[in-house]
Length: 534
Image 1 (tube, rainbow, N blue to C red):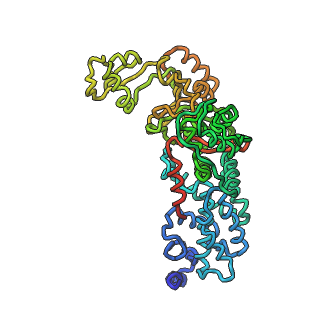
Image 2 (cartoon, helix red, strand yellow):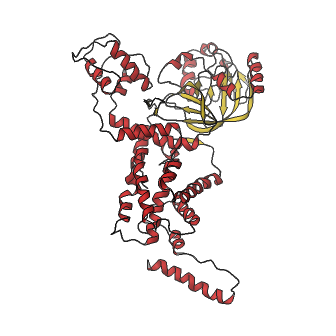
Image 3 (tube, rainbow, N blue to C red):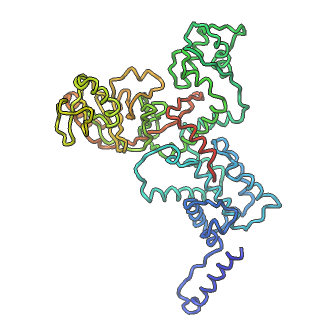
């Protein structure tokens, strides 16, 4: 305390001679609040010792807009902040992480002894972080789940901080309204938040686990049927159960299991296999935490999704087209296998290739194609594959030492055997992935649909490409497609693309739907949320 005011006094003493010599030069006075802010966190022992540069910049901008006046001198304002922090629990955020108990102590008659400016800055830090976490996510997405996007311009990064501090200053006069305003307006977020709030306020149910065993098909008898019947009843998929402990897997249980499978993005065939059994045996606690994890993902989604865009949920293998903030079309996709995952990214679809050829990526060449060629070189002609060297010169298969091929490029001509089908949609990314048509249409009826080597196969890909084109471009594309030749052109208006990942959402009827965590991201995100500090 003494040191801080000593600095302030020193500044004043240094300025005094200048004023007497040249009064015309106005020397700005540095307020105690300014001095405290410039020396954080050392000037305030109450502040977190790991106060990073972005948090300090946010505080500085906030108080600059406040003209360095205290924001929380009114006890009523602090009292109004407390219930807003308590309600963060419905957003899957832990109110205790926002120093709730300590803030409650500040409004008590025997409040903690702390310098008024430091107390004010501490409360503002909590307030700003809560708003920022609600608006953009508790964690930085790229540090938890790999996410690629083009580097943001410096002014874009600054605008994020400025937007939070601007809203924070405005919100001081109506704290409930500002918390509501920064909370993502995405329907997915609002619906999931309501479902999570309802679940967390109820005692956790107890679900009976179902033992492992062979496939259980309709009309089979199995000792596990009573446990399965009880499990389906407990979660509401079966309206009533018989107490005779029958081991027959009858029509009522089959239909109930199909409903369970549909709400968990599984093949709704009424057969209890390994995937269905695993989903049945997920604990109520784990399911509730799954909602909390996905609330964080929807906070990320809220500031990444543009009003007009193509959105892909990789986990669900589903694509949605948005126009002016409204979903206008949806289709199924096939995404990368767990060993070759589809990357999470933000880009723009800028080019369309009609009747595409397929240049085999190095990994697929090395791991998939080369072993087949070594077994039988007829594999090349059977799959219409051509061979090119580094200069683009076509080679005969006999010119290549397939035990040590060096650099060669395999290319498959356009046609019915081509894995890209009739159209490919291209966008900037460092992974060499794109959206495309596919001859593997029956796989769209499977669930989950993780079959590709990283690219996204799109059901009705031609229809998707037409939605990205102007009328003139559609007419031109139809002519080029009919020629059978490969053509590529740039879209006059590139379409924003967001390839994201979430494993739970709520439908229009309020029913929660779960998706298989195909890339095992949920556990890492949950651990990061639980270990994060303010």
